[in-house]
Amino acid sequence: MNLRDLRYLLAVAEHGHFGRAAEACGVSQPTLSVQIRKLEGQLGVALFERGGKTVAPTSACERLIGHVRAAVAEADAILAVAGSLRDPLAGRIRLGVIPTLAPYLLPLVFAPLRDALPHLEVEPWEDQTAALLDRLRGHELDAALLATDVDGPDLASQPLFAEPFLAALPPEHPLARKAMVAEAELARDILVLADGHCLRDQALAACGRSEALGGTLRAVSISTLLNMVAAGYGTTLIPALAAGAAEDAGIVLRPLAARVGRTVRIAWRAHFPRRAAIEAVGEVIAARLRGFAQGAAKGAV
Image: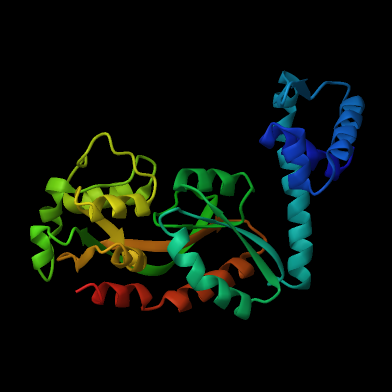
């Protein structure tokens, strides 16, 4: 039994398909299949039920896979510690990013990250907050960019920058004639994202609502909300980094009277051995965004 075969096992379990697992591992499907068969022979149990185009873990695999993940994570930790002893700012950092931040932030920071940290490979992963935290705790990510606080002694975080919210309005909306909008004025026809997005809860709380307009709308992206606003279906709140996308859609942006917003922070496991790399990534992002979101908010008037 070797670490490579354990990684193959995890890949097949995640993808449910030998071909996709082999592609993810960078090997041929026959090679991966042979190694899985050898691993099953060593363990004396069948790990996967093979049938048709799909592969399902057996009950034996379900009982073993937690131990496999732990073993792989510990091996990765050994490699990470050794790498950090050589150069803490080299190697790979798997960085989770929430969907309401990723499309607006990543294009701004990737060039500065490459310039400032040329030996560090930042690998982004976009998902909702709960999923990112699960992956972070499961050692599938090294850090995550979030817009909420993190709970528990197993995680640490630090704030990077404050991002104000802006009112996004159809051009013909009565509020578009105002220089500044009170959050409560948006409550009547505000549109928000579907459950699971932290921006949904933040927008509703800012406007003093528990639910939003259009109970059948289940938008999963800011771009969908902006398209609905542009069509005159309602209003919404957007983070300042999305101001450019809103203006491109012909939407009127106005600052909010209470200046509500969110704090973007970077989170990591408290005992992650490459904390210096995480902090370096955070410093580059904070420096690039210093004043950017505030400038976008001022430009909305």
